[in-house]
Image 1 (cartoon, rainbow, N blue to C red):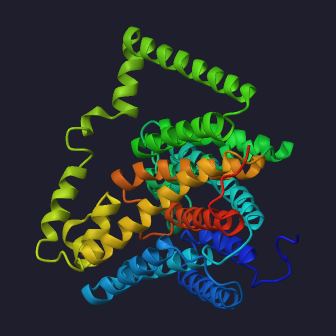
Image 2 (cartoon, rainbow, N blue to C red; image 1 turned 180 degrees about the vertical axis):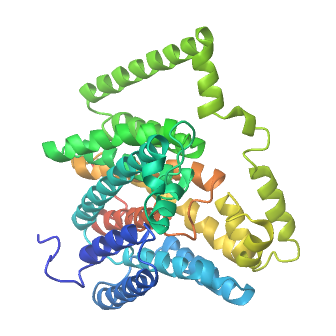
Length: 439
C-alpha cells in the first residue's frame, strides 16, 4: 500500500509535516510581520487540505469528534463576543484545523507513518532547542561583554532567551517552563522512536536528545511541571508497553523488572545522598525543587483565586482574556480547565470535558484491544498515546496545557494523539466489529 504521495501537497501527511515544521520555525519570533503572513498561509493551506480530503475520505465521526467541534466553535466565538480574539483566536483556529485534519479517515499504517515523521521533526527541533539554549546561556554567563557588544536588537534577543547558567535559564523559547515543555515533547518522541528500532543515526540522536532534555528540564530550567510530566510519561509508557502490550512475552517482563530494579536502586541512592550530603540536599531543595516557592504554588494559588473571582457573573461564556492579562499581568490561569472556564465559560468547559475524558477512554481501550496483536509498531503507538495523555495531565493541571497557544506545540501534538486514537479505535470496529482479537 502506498502510504503517502510525497509529490502531492494536498496529501494529509504532507500537510501535517509542512504545518509542523513552519509552526516550529515561527516560534523563534524573528520574522516579525512576515511571520504573520506565513502563519496565515499555513492556516489557509490546512483549511484547503481539510476541504479537499474531507470530501473524498470523510471524517471519523465519534463523540470525541463532535465534542471537539463544539468546544472549538465556542472557544472561537467566546473571545469574539467577550473581546481578546486577536490574542488567542488565531492560535485556537490553527489548533482546530489540525484537529480536523487528524479526524479525516485513513488507514492505521498511514497514521503510524505520520507519527514516525513527526517524531523525527520534534526530536530534531528538541535537540536544537536544547543545544541552542545551553549555548546562549553559556555565552551570556561567561562572555557577557561579547554579547553586549553586538547590535542592541541581537543582544536583547539573546539576553531574553538565555538566563544565567548558575540559576534558571530562559532558553530558546524565551521562558524556562516553555523551553522545558519544548524539550519534554522532543524527549517523549525520542523514547517512542527508540522503541520503533530506528537506524543508528536516529537512535544516537534520540538518546542524546533524551539526555540533553533531562538536563534542561531537571537542572537548567528546574521546571517542576515538566519534571512531573516526564516522569509520569516514562512510568506509564514503560509499564503499559512491557506489562500490557507485551504481557505474553516473558523476556519483556524480565526487561521490565530489570528496569524497575535499577530505578528503585537509583531512588534509594538519591534519598541516601539527600540524607548524608547537606550541600547536595541544599542544591536539590533550593535550585531544583525550589521549596521557597511551594507555599503559594509559585504564585499559582494567587492566579487561581484571581481568575475565579474575575469570572463571577461571567460563567456562561467567560470573560475577556486580553483584559484579564492587562489588569492582572497573568498570561494565563495556570490550569487548562480553569482556562477554558475563564475564557469560554461553561458552554466551552462541558464539551471540553467530554472531548478530554472520552479520548482517554478510547486510548485505554486501544491499549487493551491491540495488546493482542502481533504488530509491535502499532502496540508502541497506542502505548505512546496513553502515556502522552498521562504526561499532558500534569501540564494541564499546573500550567494550562498550551490549550490556546501554538508554542510549545504540546496541545497541537495532543490534537494528533486524540484524532489518531479515535481513528485507530474505529478502524478496529469497522474491521472486526465487536469481535475480540485473538492472541
